[in-house]
Amino acid sequence: MTDGRRTLSWHELELRTNAFGHGLEALGLAPGDHVLLVAGNRHEFIEGLIGAMRAGMVVTPAKAGLTVEELAYIADDAGSRAVVADRDAARALAQGRGLALVDFDHGYETWLQAQSSDPLPADRAGWRLPYTSGTTGRPKGVVQSTAGRVPFWRAWAGNVAFAQRLRLPGHGWHAMLSRLYHGAPLNFGLAAMASGAAMRILPTWSPEAALDELQRSSSTCMVPTMFRQLLSLPEARRRRFDPDGLLTVVHGGEPCPIELKRRMIEWWGPIFLEYFGFTEGGMTLATTEEWLAHPGTVGRPAGQGVVIRGPEGDALPARSEGQVYFSPPDEGTRDFAYLHDPAKTSDAHASDGSFTAGDIGWLDDDGYLYISGRASEVIVSAGVNVYPAEVEAVITEVPGVADACVVGGPDPERGEQVVAFVALAPAGSDQTEGPDPVMAAIRRSCDDRLAGYKRPRQLVVRPTIPRDGTGKLLRRVLRDELWGDDSPFAAPRD
Image (tube, rainbow, N blue to C red; front, side, top):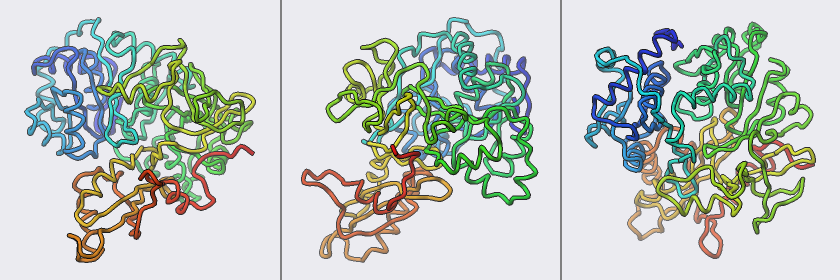
């Protein structure tokens, strides 16, 4: 594994991850305790993740750009005992909460070398606790049914079969172009490692640097926003790239327009494997050959079934649009639960154990899935989910704001961008200075309380925000206004 600063052999990674696990125990942690991991793209991120799990800890990799307030919510909800970080917000959280801190930038090597590198007990069953949000805005931890029950070594070995399903070659370099805290790219990168590939970590994304990495890589994982940026490079630079050594490009995380994907296939060849799935579980896969035969599809289910349900929960026939549910192999069971939220867990599941994340789609006659919308109105910007309710909660606390609605608008590079429609308090109320001071206050509040990718790119003032007779926000009205007849999703049924 290399991040451009340091290269580690398997033997060194073995010693360092054992030492990291022993170091957490020396800080007073025990198997089952929670560790919050907040760091950028560097080899220490992988060391910390694997080391904590080998020691039997529960680890949450959090987005590196989260604010202290956002991190504090996760730490409190998960009951964190330690913070592993290279970010000031995470350091401030550890200090404010009195949590143990492992700081990658201050004393890390000295601390690590002071620990034993003897093998940790083989029965330790550490696991990852990812956080994902819903329409209520606050993130929720996703607890898989196998959490804490599978020894780390067995889970690591199981990655080999996963890599084979993803057509990851298991040799050469696997390029980590996305942020390491992103769930799917991290899963795919670890699977590539487990099957024998070396990991090459790009510290910071740029199209030029990515092409340099891919020139010497066998596999990678990308999002369509990256495709757009690569295709925007000068033609002379694109022609210098030779894709012959690149065998597999797994991609997903956001809708990929048909023409965008066609251009990538023309440039790099039939090496793309598209995925669609959730933090909660469930996945579909489409090879390039399958996609060309079914343009716009996100594939067929891998390991689980897909059911399209109508408003009353009834299963719909092929080419009928409805809510997308993944069904577990064993009917009546549930593959996951939301931490501390049995009501949300129940709402996400049907009586047979199948679950939904709110996406709208349909199946063709051959069982290929197409996504046509999102019931939950989640904004996907450059492959990262933004939950409108979380942004709205910040905006509506600003004095002078009467109402707000956040939706996704078109962005030629990121796919979608965050757009906030705001209604101001009427004259004679506490707000009497006009819209400009309120807009400035909104931006300050968003800068202080929200990670950069969540902040509105546009603020639009409206006399009122559309709601129905029950007071429910009519997001679709504002969203359709931004998009017109265009759609960010893949393919209509005709």
